[in-house]
Length: 371
Image 1 (cartoon, rainbow, N blue to C red):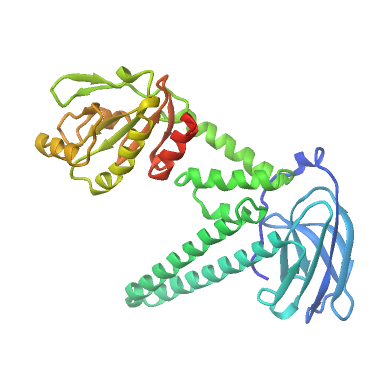
Image 2: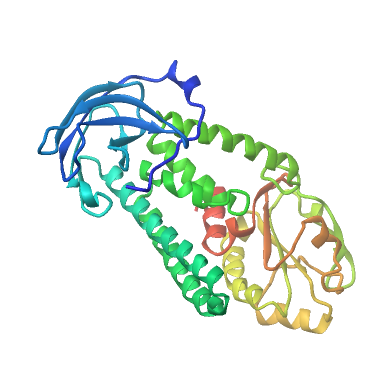
């Protein structure tokens, strides 16, 4: 089996604190032709074996052994075949399959999370093979670039859909681990954090997960230190012009929970999001929730018309009427709208961006106000 989890981690430090586990792994794999099988870990460039057992001429084998800790292991079936297993204390797993096509014909009993993980790795391997084949064809025949790229784009979208289905179907499961390498933590921080937290909840004893969490926490601390809009930091204050030509500061709303909403009359996604903001305002206004809308319009009449059309009944509307030339936009590093920031009564940031779009805003306000 070509696909295998690589654990390029320094796990030695955890061994002192880990709890020894007892496991049973047995089964029957025909057409394999090996004399021994091993339970190992793969560290990118080498294996470390933890247990070995004979395999008879009919392909039967059986482990009843102890391992130093619960974690992600590899069942080594000779030099070319592997199965990835999640082994916990008292795991009792049975494996049946065809050694010549173990990547296709295998049945794992007693560990649904191991079964799911191997199916995901099989799917990933299939996509990788198709992608690499397409890239090689393009290199050899540049004239086919457009047609092949179109097919490859569609297949990648299909693969992404399969990934999302896998995440939903395996929520709070140790089987989510192989998803992490496919997420760019710097570009999709919240998704990575969500999946990692599910792994921590489901497999806290795993040194692999502990090490990933340790590295993530370090990255998160660095991001928070470098992000002026990180959760818990004071929201940058600014002053802008109101509808009636006066001046207003964000800090004038201290004591209320504030949704700072960057939008514009010409922005279709902003207009489409407005009903959700209106709904939240009506529901939580009496509890101390308000909205400060910062428009990136340049036409005052269109700005006012959009406010009326969308029933944005709160008073806190401001705009320099200079389009993207806005002090507030620069302070909050707004690169696209709609962009929102939720701020607590003390002026500290609670959440921002996609975290509080659509249902996310209602969820956060429900948490704050309790209804």
